[in-house]
Figure 1 (cartoon, rainbow, N blue to C red):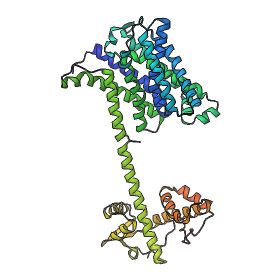
Figure 2: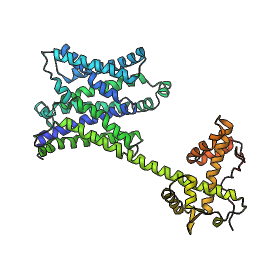
Figure 3: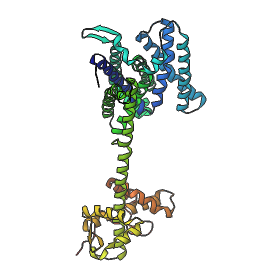
Figure 4: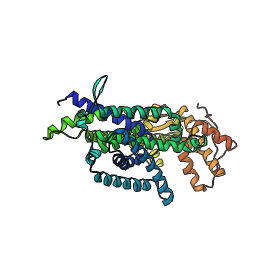
Length: 447
């Protein structure tokens, strides 16, 4: 891989600044479930660009920003209008508006002959030539695109910082925000304007494809990694930076292995960000498929272990003995598996976990509760029967379904909720089936 830092360095910096600018506003798009709005606005701003060229005959970014900001706000207003008048879903309204606006923009651009504007540059960017158009600064010659993207980053960061509390409240609870006087509609229009302006500033360098990717992908990946908003912003910015660096590096090195000279840098950044998204879908620590599968397996194993404890308690209860003697209330692996309708290997794994917690002992192929296991089993059965009593008194659930419903709820009941159940139910001593509800944390003593 051969790097020309006077060229590649600026290209990477432009990609990074674009990614940061997009991620700053993209987080709120993802959290508000408005990802499609980002794609829609990136297409819908074309009429604004064309109109600014038509009116002023200039490619000045400030003129384009004005047109984009106006079109961005207009697009959101049109989406709300179409949704209200047509009584259709928001996604359908977005599709109607952004396709119409995009088509209008293409027609306008193709008809403007006296303005030097290539539609392909709007779609794919021209990152490789940004070093040809520079501006003098105290630090030397700097590509104008880098300056524009840097200003856009600062502007987006300032908007996020100034309206941070309002953004948070209106994003997670718009009804409460409106009740407290937060200008929810203004924030929606501001977000649309920021997205539109970010798209326009980025078009000349990286094109529409990378802009759409950077608006949604880094924020979506960050959402899969954390539940905290500050952390989500941090991870989205880091992912945008990594995608930019890796994408450009692959674009100038990988094609040589297949006999090509190079690949489009902006497009490769979008590809890399997509690969990161795929990895996050499977490996994300909060919502990734792999971790969800692992957590689900752990939960199922815990539920089975609790069912085993409850089975032992009911077995002890059926003996009607006043004294709990572990050896006299043992069960075989085969009986446990057949009663719970599980395979023996699965039951054995759950039993091993209970043995590790010293809630069950094993001797000569038989399994029995320890004193600690008995107390734990008693808590589970108490929870189950309290739920049965509560559901019988407070709901219309039929008796045949009481047991199954209570059996599901008992595994997710905290000690605080169990205490509340007892208080709300008036401290019952028997369940709807006439069975005694065990007292809290009191077990018979063994000999």
